[in-house]
Structures are given as structure tokens and as C-alpha cells.
Length: 280
Image (cartoon, rainbow, N blue to C red; front, side):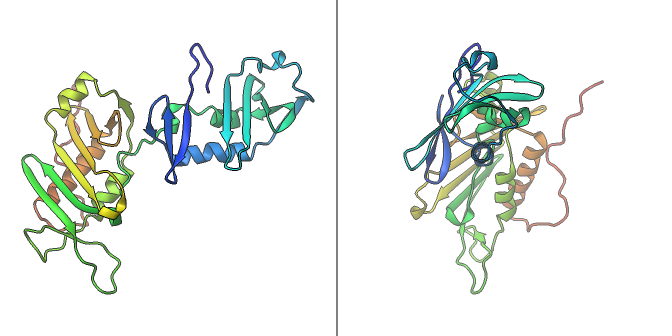
């Protein structure tokens, strides 16, 4: 909970070995930042102890803390931490594990005060190629569907093929890597007029169907760019992601290469949509 003019409450749960934000709404969580928060909590080190008891909290801004954290542990134990006011590069803190009022370095307190944007996952995709049973790529009226090829004996490298062109292996490794590396700069609401206008005529649509035993829903990514902005609408995100135009251009180049059936080149391919240069 982060206090302010309006108190904000963020609640996270561990679900299927991954973290999920469940309040104020359901969002995929950033595993790295959540684990950084938990590791910081587990290793809290006091700078000093200005009071041996928690009987008088007003002088330390702890009667109305700036942030509260509650962690419910598997063994039924609950850890509570409250942050107070700041003084000389330190922040006052109390915990349910110690009777004193302590201080933390401001840098440590800042991690504990992580907001929703820091805790939510900014990746546009979380893809494991071994769990995908079919990939459909669409761009500018062109469409191709690819399925995994049987692994060659002694090879761990995954290859794909177009069922209409059997025997012609396709490497999707670069596409999977690019998608997993892509990050949203920010998110806009589904009702955002400009994003909806651009996405109404998408440049790319990518659909990843899971294998039957993967126990996942299909992932559909709709991508479009206009001017200096590029948007991604994901079937697993409630909001629309805004990504770097260079990221969109790279993905578009990769998808068009696959649609044309070209072999993967080690040389840099020209971008299909150069960054527009603003007029002076």
C-alpha cells in the first residue's frame, strides 16, 4: 500500500510459479522487480535505531506511513513493514519482526516503495518455443502458418515448416528472441482513441497456438505504427503497449522475411519503415 492524496493498494499473488498482480486489477507482474522487492525485504539492514520501542511514532512519520508492505509467507507467518518520513538520506521504518524504530537508506526504501508501473510486466510476450504448437504470421494481406518439424536425431535445435511446403525448414529463433526482448515504453488504456485508430488497420498480426499439453491460452499480438508511435495489443494484456518504433521496424522486417520464405541472413536487413525525421 502506498499512501498519498489517494491511498493506492497493490496486491500480488504467486500463481503457477509466476507472480500476478491481482489488485487494483489483474496484470502480469515483472518477475525481476518483484523478486528484487522480496530480496530487499528479506535482507533489510538498519542504519541506526533512533528509538528502542514503537510507542511514539509521530516524530518519525510512522503514525501515517508513506508506504506499508504485508507479506504472507507459506508457513502462515505474516511480515509487516511500514515506512515513515525521510531525514538526511535515511527513511524511518518499523517492522513486525523488531520492537524498535529503525532507519533505512533512502535507496533501499525506494525499492520498497515500488509503484504499479515498476511491478507490472512490460514485456509484450513471454514465449517458450517448445510449448508452441503453431505460429500464424500475417502482414499486409500475406499469411503463413508454421508448425514444428520433428527434431533431427542428435539435434536440439527447433525448426519449423509450412505444411504447404514440407521439407523446407524455417528458423523462428530470431523472431521468438525479438518478441521476448521487446518491452513497452508505457501502456495506454484500451479506449485510447489514437491507439484504436492506428490498430484498426494493423500492420502485423501474430498468433501463437500452444501445444495441447501446455495448458495455456493462445497468444495473439496485433501491431501497428503511425508516425513516431508503434502500438501492440496483446490477448494477455488488458492495456495497449507503446513500443519503440525501431523495435516495431525490426519485428516487421523479420516477419516479412519469413512470409517471403527468405533464409535468415546474418547481415542487417534494411528497415521497412524508417523513423520519420521531424521537420525543423
